[in-house]
Image 1 (cartoon, rainbow, N blue to C red):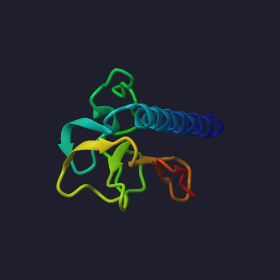
Image 2 (tube, rainbow, N blue to C red; image 1 turned 30 degrees about the vertical axis):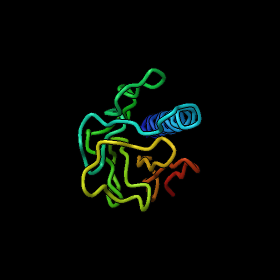
Image 3 (tube, rainbow, N blue to C red; image 1 turned 120 degrees about the horizontal axis):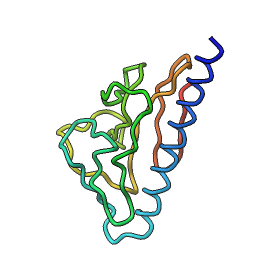
Length: 131
């Protein structure tokens, strides 16, 4: 059981590091780029972070949840999921599906294991871990 708890802690630490790195990259892109719009390779209601089209200074193809099933995080799902962008105005899904993300105005959902409510998110204003 102790090993299992340490494994969960390690995966959560990786998740926090991944999301912090994405936030840093988006902040730099926001501050230094002429355009803040980033393309998503596949139109979706909850685009996956790793589908962000690479730019000169950002490549997210390997930024994936360490233990995910590949399903995008949803606001109502309290289970392991893949990091995903959601509508920055309310954290809900994009409707209609989107193919772009604003590096200066975003909402990324992710999940932390072992919490009463592991649903977590990050915006340009901060990172909010689950309770």
